[in-house]
Length: 79
Image 1 (cartoon, rainbow, N blue to C red):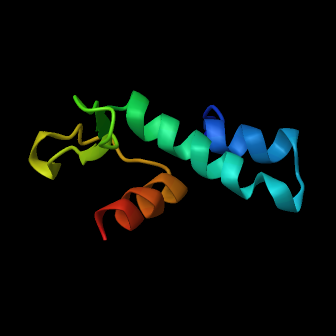
Image 2: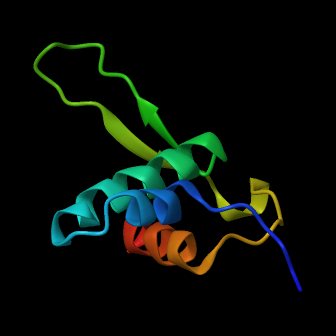
Image 3: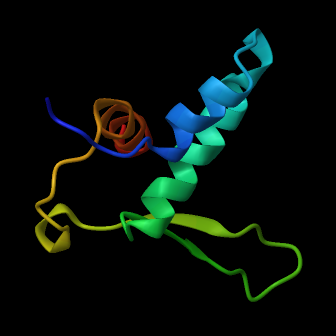
């Protein structure tokens, strides 16, 4: 049997399994992508401009496979 740790998004779903947890799962997924350096945020120098989401180029990414829900979330950001 293959044992692995729960991802943050899976843990959120198990801790609060209601219809209102979808946004929390997406937030947890984004935090996982941020922690894995697959996305980053560029801070705005101006108070009138919003921060920007930066996607890490695929050539520089760690080849370690992501869980399927994170692959789909990352693909949604790319699209």
